[in-house]
Image 1 (cartoon, protein in one colour):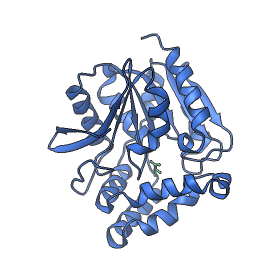
Image 2: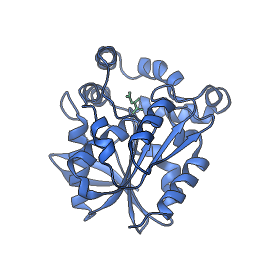
Image 3: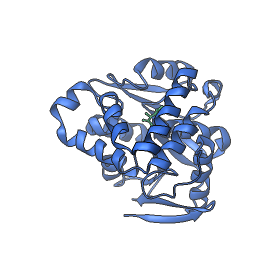
Image 4: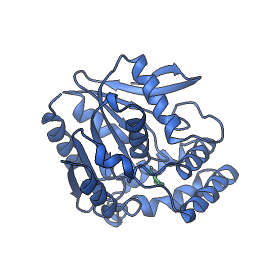
Amino acid sequence: MKNVARVRGIEIAYEDAGRGRPVVLLHGFPFNRSLWREQVESLSATHRVITPDLRGHGETTVVAELATMEEMAEDLAALLDELNVGRTVVGGLSMGGYVTLAFLRAHPERVGALVLADTRPQADTDEARRTREETARRALADGMEPITDAMLPKLLAPATREQRPDMVARVREMILGTNPHGAAAALRGMAVRRDQTDLLPGIGVPTLIIVGSEDAITPPSDSATMQAKIKGSHLLKIEGAGHVSNVERPGEFNRALAEFLGGLPF
Ligand code: MLT
C-alpha cells in the first residue's frame, strides 16, 4: 500500500507493512520500492518493513540537479521521525547501500543492525565519474530506454537473462519507469559520494552482507572487503545471482534475512 510523507519539502512515497521490529530497505539505482516486493511479502509477517522510494525515484518527488547520498539519508531520518521509528534495522541494495552507510555515519544511534546487499563502501574512480556524467546527460537527452539497454546486461546474471524473462521484464520496467531527471540527479549524487571505508572498522552492530556471485557492478570482492573490515559480520554469496540478488534469488535472500533478523539481540 502506498503512503506519502511530506518532509523536507518533498513527498516521499513509501510502504509500511507488518508489525514488530522495524526494518528499512532502500532500493538501488534506478529502481523503486517495488524492488523489495518479495522481501516485504515474506518479512512483514514478523516485522514492520518500511520501503521508501528514494528522492527522484518511484513516486517520490524529483528534485534539483543533484541528489546526494547524504540528502537521501536525511530524507530517511525525517521519514523515520514522521513514523516514530527510533532505532531500526537498515538495509540497502547497491545505491541503497551507499545511502545506508551515509545514514549510519550521520545517525549511528538509529541503526540497530545493517544489511549491505550488492554494494560497496568506496567512492567512484575518476573514470566512473565521467561515465556517470555521460549517462546522466544521455538520460536527460534521450530518456531511460538507452540506459535500460546498457544496464540490463550488467544488472542480471547471464542465467537470469536467458531463463527468466519475467525478471528481465520487471527490472526493465522499473528502469523505464524512473524519471530521467531523478536518474540524472542520483547519478551525479553517486559520483560525488564519499569513501565510507573508514566507517567500517567502527561498526559495532550486527551486519549481514549479501552478494550475487555474478554481480558485475559491485562484485563479490567488494563484499569480501567489507566483511574483512566489519567485525563479526556475516557474508552470504548467492551462487548464480547477479547484481539484483534479491530479485534473482528471493528464496535464498529472504531465508538469510529472516535468520539474521531472528538472531538479533535488540
Ligand atoms: C545500483 O544498482 O544502485 C547502481 O548500479 C549502483 C552504482 O551504479 O554504483
